[in-house]
Length: 328
Image (tube, rainbow, N blue to C red; front, side, top):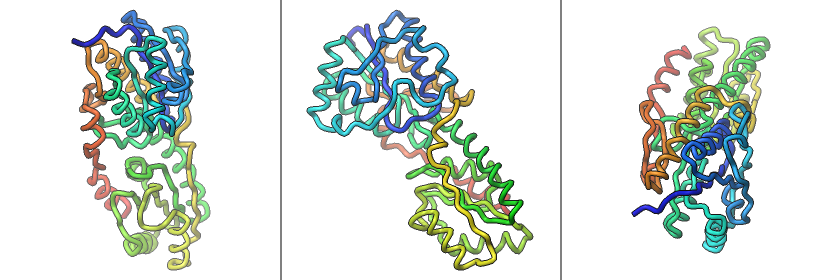
């Protein structure tokens, strides 16, 4: 029989993403609605280890839904990876009466939460918050939509100067292991070529594509590069290779970097965070544990951590075909 849940803890962990504050807000207010105490932990698992926490209620999360980042801060805890660190965390939860946890973050957060839950029988629900959109069990992660819009806005501005100076721009976007951001923004911004970790398109194909663009009368080009692309060691090496082999191009590199993580979350991300986190609280109150919540075909659904972490959240290769057609 599931134990009664009287206090729920919430934390954000790993890389921050727009919409995390909306998620924190939803957890706190759902707890208030169901008359459950809510405790927020600062700096993720490290805050659990150190007992760095605060009592949260419906009023303590006012006016944060539009803010980027996370008011609970975020961190990666090396100490939590060791059993001694997790033992300290469990002791602090017991000391302040936390019965269950909502963990907002990515795959590393979920793996840590799963191990912790199994060791100490503490119910845990994961909420996917990462701009990379690389977690199975959901069509969209919190922060992904905002990151797409941030990247599109930046590429549109770079396109203006590329056209003005007849330049080729390599634009690197985040996505060390997944090309969702690169692929979707590349299509949305009308890039001439898109390079992603999942598809090794090769240097010869890249050169041929740029030559074809030149022959078709294009005086400027945009190549969107996911940071995990395997063609070159890095985007600068790619740019040097093109400069050496296509001297007619005036090549520039822009790395968008951490600007993609920041900014006010989009309406979609605010709504997604709200839906997922209300469901997370309700699942805990219903006795569920060791699952993540996600949006599948516009319906909130629960998926086991095992499936969410080992499942295949594949890119849409149809977008690559569309990109080839539209870059003609």
